[in-house]
Image 1 (cartoon, helix red, strand yellow):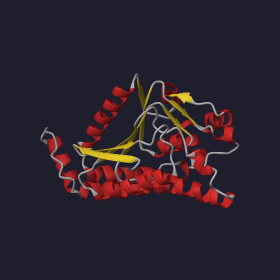
Image 2: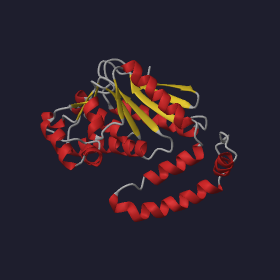
Image 3: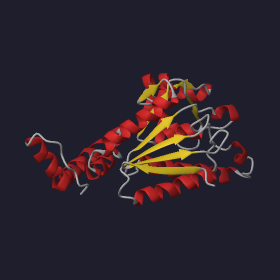
Image 4: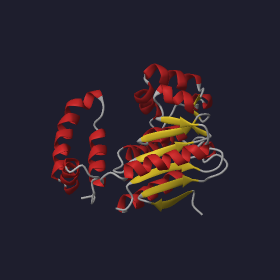
Length: 258
């Protein structure tokens, strides 16, 4: 039995992590996640992905026991690079990935969360990067993504103190989009949000996500130039023409994802 399962309904692929007790992100889990992304990428019927955890936590961190099997810093850096490359792929994935966080997302778990396009949590979920308690620093791009989301000062505070924040706090910090009182509402809202996105044309969603890969002050000029080209592609698509015509005719567009 693997550590991840996937179900597909109404163009939404729900990927669930189940590796009790903490859903730790071992190398095998990361490899399995990469394989599932390969599968989803090839399935045209999948328009949105919801990533969630089973049990007490979303993902309470990396697999610390696995760390003890690494003999050198060079090998440890390779382990970090594996996670970084996977999370980079998630961030630039051509289909939106919504992450639903309950219980805890710590260390590597939070680094996975931050790579997703949209993040939702329960009010009491714990989110943090406690690596410095182990005498380490974040290794799956946590030092780069967290400041982008919450600002440099807040990111340094979280990492240097190793203290997690709640899902409710994470909303005010800009780390997650919204929080909900319990898991049931969290998972329901994640599916509702996914269904709203699934109603859009997969062509224009993909173009939009490509434009968002250029977001950042240093890439602004390049990003807006790319945006203009993608804007033109969207206009040339069948769905672009259909969307405009539907607006003029005051009706709901019938996208064909082409």
